[in-house]
Image (cartoon, rainbow, N blue to C red; front, side, top):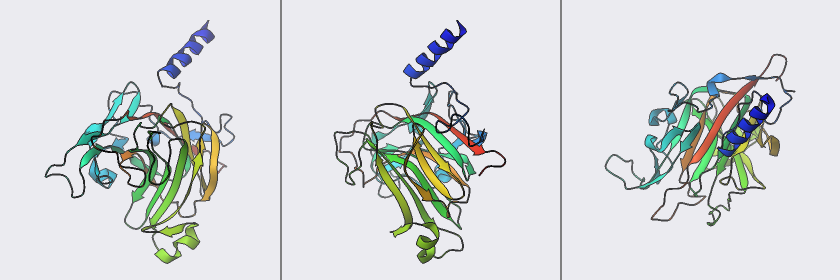
Length: 290
């Protein structure tokens, strides 16, 4: 009888878009990697508000105002029914807005804690418009400025993005804007990246058998001292990339952005279904493992 009740609970949670807590990464359910939970970057979003000991929506903590024309607005972020929700809205600029921002407000959260290396997993469903839904890490510490984009996704299959992105792919990149003690010209040789504008970057887009805005799926980043690798529903996707220049602790981010290389929505904009994160979980590898 107990097994039947537990089974029913799992089915009910799945139908609601939520999953039962799991102590191990979807990529390693047998725990061959000796994973140990890392509480500072783990959140089931089961409270009725964003946990301010873990997350911030303050512009000073996020580090920027948003990607123009969409301005980050903390009121577009909410926690409801065990899910972190990041929304977007049509809006008109006022005198308090920075130059270049108009027509849209978006959303962003940045972790209070920073880390380097580990396995980081979210269960999420991307927003339904071409305003991006992203899971990433970044920090501009002054001496170094690095970024890992686990995914920058677009919804809305009915529109074509300028860069060719679709909801049926995962695009993952790293960007090294500056590295303490390393000249910009030396970044490609040291970091295994290519200078593109203000950053030295590397990454890839990989096709998926589903649309990221249709249903919840798990997305993971495995990051160690030598490589970083992205996982979808427990399986590795795309190549493993060089992590030689990704050694400093950085913060975790979830956000929505009006990315011109994807597509800025036409006006008038109808608010889309939010970017929904069921959970984020983090692990470190135990003693004797990398």
